[in-house]
Length: 120
Image (cartoon, rainbow, N blue to C red; front, side):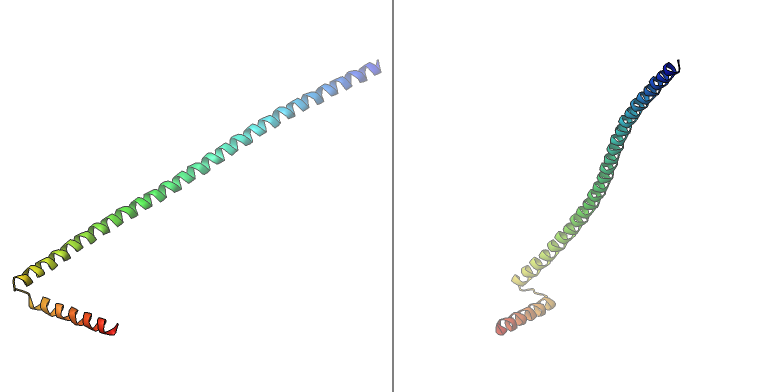
Protein backbone atom coordinates (compact mmCIF):
# COMPACT_ATOMS: atom_id res chain seq x y z
CA UNK A 1 0.00 0.00 0.00
CA UNK A 2 2.85 2.41 0.73
CA UNK A 3 4.35 1.49 -2.63
CA UNK A 4 1.04 2.15 -4.36
CA UNK A 5 0.84 5.49 -2.61
CA UNK A 6 4.39 6.35 -3.70
CA UNK A 7 3.64 5.32 -7.28
CA UNK A 8 0.50 7.48 -7.22
CA UNK A 9 2.50 10.42 -5.89
CA UNK A 10 5.16 9.87 -8.58
CA UNK A 11 2.47 9.78 -11.28
CA UNK A 12 0.91 12.93 -9.83
CA UNK A 13 4.31 14.57 -9.68
CA UNK A 14 5.08 13.57 -13.29
CA UNK A 15 1.66 14.87 -14.36
CA UNK A 16 2.36 18.18 -12.59
CA UNK A 17 5.80 18.39 -14.24
CA UNK A 18 4.26 17.64 -17.64
CA UNK A 19 1.61 20.32 -17.09
CA UNK A 20 4.34 22.77 -16.05
CA UNK A 21 6.32 21.97 -19.22
CA UNK A 22 3.20 22.52 -21.34
CA UNK A 23 2.49 25.79 -19.60
CA UNK A 24 6.12 26.89 -20.01
CA UNK A 25 5.97 26.01 -23.70
CA UNK A 26 2.73 27.97 -24.14
CA UNK A 27 4.18 30.93 -22.25
CA UNK A 28 7.34 30.80 -24.39
CA UNK A 29 5.22 30.87 -27.54
CA UNK A 30 3.23 33.81 -26.16
CA UNK A 31 6.44 35.65 -25.25
CA UNK A 32 7.74 35.13 -28.80
CA UNK A 33 4.47 36.45 -30.25
CA UNK A 34 4.67 39.48 -27.98
CA UNK A 35 8.30 40.08 -28.99
CA UNK A 36 7.30 39.94 -32.66
CA UNK A 37 4.43 42.34 -32.01
CA UNK A 38 6.79 44.68 -30.17
CA UNK A 39 9.27 44.54 -33.05
CA UNK A 40 6.47 45.34 -35.49
CA UNK A 41 5.40 48.29 -33.35
CA UNK A 42 9.00 49.49 -33.15
CA UNK A 43 9.30 49.29 -36.93
CA UNK A 44 6.01 51.15 -37.36
CA UNK A 45 7.18 53.79 -34.93
CA UNK A 46 10.49 54.10 -36.76
CA UNK A 47 8.67 54.29 -40.10
CA UNK A 48 6.28 56.92 -38.74
CA UNK A 49 9.12 59.04 -37.38
CA UNK A 50 11.00 58.64 -40.67
CA UNK A 51 7.91 59.74 -42.60
CA UNK A 52 7.46 62.71 -40.28
CA UNK A 53 11.10 63.72 -40.78
CA UNK A 54 10.77 63.30 -44.55
CA UNK A 55 7.61 65.44 -44.55
CA UNK A 56 9.43 68.14 -42.61
CA UNK A 57 12.31 68.01 -45.09
CA UNK A 58 9.83 68.18 -47.97
CA UNK A 59 8.14 71.22 -46.42
CA UNK A 60 11.53 72.89 -45.97
CA UNK A 61 12.50 72.16 -49.57
CA UNK A 62 9.17 73.49 -50.83
CA UNK A 63 9.70 76.70 -48.87
CA UNK A 64 13.20 77.02 -50.32
CA UNK A 65 11.83 76.48 -53.84
CA UNK A 66 9.19 79.20 -53.29
CA UNK A 67 11.86 81.55 -51.96
CA UNK A 68 14.14 80.84 -54.94
CA UNK A 69 11.24 81.29 -57.37
CA UNK A 70 10.51 84.66 -55.78
CA UNK A 71 14.18 85.66 -56.04
CA UNK A 72 14.24 84.56 -59.68
CA UNK A 73 11.11 86.57 -60.41
CA UNK A 74 12.64 89.65 -58.76
CA UNK A 75 15.90 89.18 -60.69
CA UNK A 76 14.01 88.82 -63.99
CA UNK A 77 12.04 91.97 -63.25
CA UNK A 78 15.21 93.92 -62.44
CA UNK A 79 16.84 92.55 -65.60
CA UNK A 80 13.91 93.69 -67.74
CA UNK A 81 14.01 97.12 -66.11
CA UNK A 82 17.76 97.46 -66.80
CA UNK A 83 17.33 96.32 -70.40
CA UNK A 84 14.52 98.84 -70.84
CA UNK A 85 16.73 101.64 -69.52
CA UNK A 86 19.58 100.63 -71.87
CA UNK A 87 17.19 100.49 -74.83
CA UNK A 88 15.86 103.90 -73.94
CA UNK A 89 19.38 105.34 -73.73
CA UNK A 90 20.33 103.71 -77.04
CA UNK A 91 17.22 105.13 -78.67
CA UNK A 92 18.03 108.60 -77.36
CA UNK A 93 21.65 108.19 -78.53
CA UNK A 94 20.50 107.26 -82.03
CA UNK A 95 18.24 110.32 -82.05
CA UNK A 96 21.14 112.48 -80.87
CA UNK A 97 19.58 113.24 -77.51
CA UNK A 98 21.94 111.45 -75.12
CA UNK A 99 21.76 112.49 -71.49
CA UNK A 100 24.97 114.08 -70.15
CA UNK A 101 25.29 111.60 -67.27
CA UNK A 102 24.94 108.71 -69.68
CA UNK A 103 27.56 110.23 -71.96
CA UNK A 104 29.99 110.58 -69.03
CA UNK A 105 29.33 107.01 -67.95
CA UNK A 106 29.97 105.71 -71.48
CA UNK A 107 33.22 107.65 -71.71
CA UNK A 108 34.35 106.17 -68.38
CA UNK A 109 33.49 102.68 -69.64
CA UNK A 110 35.49 103.28 -72.82
CA UNK A 111 38.45 104.55 -70.81
CA UNK A 112 38.33 101.49 -68.55
CA UNK A 113 38.17 99.16 -71.55
CA UNK A 114 41.15 100.87 -73.19
CA UNK A 115 43.14 100.63 -69.95
CA UNK A 116 42.38 96.92 -69.61
CA UNK A 117 43.36 96.15 -73.21
CA UNK A 118 46.60 98.07 -72.81
CA UNK A 119 47.48 96.09 -69.69
CA UNK A 120 47.12 92.79 -71.56
